[in-house]
Structure formats: C-alpha cells, structure tokens
Length: 422
Image (cartoon, rainbow, N blue to C red):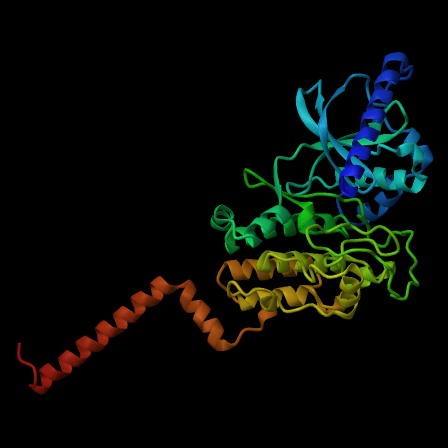
C-alpha cells in the first residue's frame, strides 16, 4: 500500500470519527440559545473592501460567535476529497433537500489556532465574492465539537487540469470538444472572476488549473481561496526572506501541490516575488503572473517548468527563466500573439507585466476578435493581414468590383480605339 493511499485512508477514518462524535453530541446536547445570524453586507468599493479586513479577520472569540450547526440539518453522503488541512464531504441539506459540499477540518482539535483562523477566513472571503465565476458559499458555522465548517455548491464536471491532461494525452473526444477558441473562452471567464475579486481588493495567490472547475453546462468557477487575502493585509511570512532555497522533496509530474510555509503557493504558478516569500510585494500583479501561467498551460497542455524538482522550479521562477511556450510544444504551431501575451503576463518584475487583469483580458478579446494584442507589438503588415482576415467578405467584394471596373475600362478603351467591335 503506497503512502498516499495510507494517508487517504487515515484522513477518511478521521472524518468518520469526527462525524460519529458529532452525531453522539447532537443526540445529547440541547442548544439553549437562539441561533445567531451574522449579516455580512456586500462590499461596494475599494474603501469598503479595506474596511472588511477587520470584519473578516478571525480569532478565537470570532469562532465562538459563529452560528452552531442545527442538529440533524446535514446528512453525510460520501467523502469528496482532501486538500491541505481540510476535507470536503458531500452532505444533504435536509431543509432544502439538495446536496452540497461541506468543508471541514477533521483534526481541528489538534490544529493551531492560526489554521482554524485561516479556514474561517477562507470561508468568509469566498462568501463575500458573489460572482458567477467564483464558487458560492452557502453557510458557515461550527459543529457541536466547536470545529468550523462551511458549505458550498456541489460541483459536477472536471477541473481545467483534468481537461489539459486529456488534451496532452491526445484524447480525440477532448481535442474535438476543446479547441483553442473554446479554451480561451473558458480563460476569459477565469479573468472575469479575478477582475471581480481584485475590485474587492482580494488576491487569490493560488490560481492554477487544479483550482478551476469547468462544469458540464459551460459554468467556470474559481475554487480554493485558502491563500487569499486582502491587498496590503499582514501575513505570517518573513518579509525579509532573501530567496535562499528551501528544500522540498520530489518533482511536480502529475499534480501541482500547494506549498505551505515560508513560500506559499504552487510551484510553476507562483510569481517570482511569491516564490521568494516576499510578502510585501504581493499585489494584483502576483495573480496576473499565475494567470499567464494558466494561459501557458492552455497553449502547451503543460504547466510551466513541469516535471522538474521543486527547488529547481522555484529557483528558475525567481530568476525569470521561463521557456518560450513554443519550445515546449512540438505537436502544433502556437499563435505568436498568445505567446507574447504569456511572456508579458509572466514578466519577472511586476512592472513588466500587465498592470491589471483588465489589460490582459482586453488582449485576449483582441485575439478572439481577430485583432493584434498590444503585447504582440504587431507590424503594419501583420495588422493589414488581420484586417483583411476579419473583413474577408467585404475585401473579396471590393477586389471583385475593382477587377470588374478594370476589365470594363479596358474593354471600353479597346472599343473606342477601334480594336474591339461589338
């Protein structure tokens, strides 16, 4: 039995024990007080978002004020998965009769308070970001053991990472379903969600294909806001970290794991300042780097620097040594315009990147509309070609009309010259 399977079984046993304890307590404990409802007002601008830092910041007293979970409200169905400190299970909400996903901490009693606070902060931040491209949070509270939980939409479909893996394996059905245009339309929806989060002064800090859900009916949702924070908010990372390499075992071959330590994020998708643990430099442009890395993966079906040791990935990221996407792809020719967009988004220095997700989105819209993205700095000849390509029908009509005028003029000239007789 391999280690990952042993860990999965151990985690599943922890969930079962956690749920059994809760059921036992639910049968014997009476909630003497009326449930308390927390009303969170929607943010309306940058100043509101900055004020939210105080309402979202969590501590032990905040945890005690969370609404207790009503006895018997949720029925356990099955385990969905594990990630970091939390587990996700499928439960049935008996009141609404719908199935939802519930995030819990199976070993909450053994976790430091900082982990509990981060879990609650993730739930609250995600709940604030009500947008069609961000996973919705339905409920937050504490169970009878005093451990926090939150419920979300139960997702059906697959991650962008799973789609790219199928494309990398040349799966015919997936190749037919997800051409570049379809993938870029998915990408635009990702950008829409991030633009909204940034408008609320929230940065994700762990954007990657594994955290993008693509539903069966066209829905695209950004998941896992566990590292998210407000721009400028304090964080328990050494700001004076000088970029000295940390030892991480293994390589990133089949999965991209989020590191949780001095360097927080996913190797290959972390911006250089994030890989170096320089917290004070993180802002919207840190997410823009990750969005560039996602576009890299969409173009090449591979993560940037994939398959290398984690230490090497982090070192190459800090130094800005990202290979041109075309060098990683031998199966098909990649659009030069999209390669230029990737390189601009993944600039080593934040000043070299797009300064907002809106700028990046406009370049994607330009490409989809048949125009040259600003990042490409296209020549006049390329712009002329794109103009003709966009207006080929009108161009064909004008060429035909011009040829007709030339032919008629030539025939008229011959007629008046006496060379042509009707």
